[in-house]
Length: 190
Image (cartoon, rainbow, N blue to C red):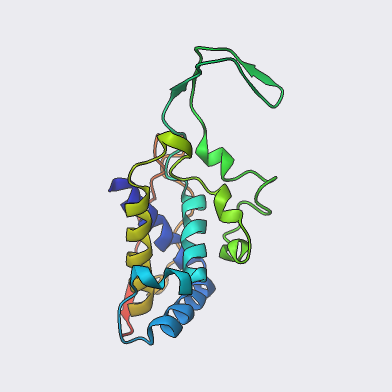
């Protein structure tokens, strides 16, 4: 639950820093719902830009700096490195999701990078394999429904006279990337 809340907070920060993304997502949502019903999970296939925005939020937020520790059961070779059997390793998810070889301009917030591509498969906030997060499905559903309905019903903006909140983490070296405190204005639309 805490990771979902943190992802939503990072989502708000990126929405506040990228108002055109908010407008584009809202336009897509209103086209789908007609503005007369809430976003539902069944709408996901009709909301590729919202889905791409959530994927980009997860990539940028990279809530967990590294995944749970694992111990190698056999000798492994990764690139030029030999990892002996019995070594404890911790995959650094944040490094994987900012890899320039996989993501052009990795520090630019760009949901369009996922439209018509399979790039979303490179985003692994829940890890991968049999030890990935058990709550992945629930978290993805919550993010889709909450962010989709927030964007449909509210214009989210920076308070007058303030700058958009920082996209740098309060705890870059901690276990979780936490947001700095920030303020936002929610203007009711529908």
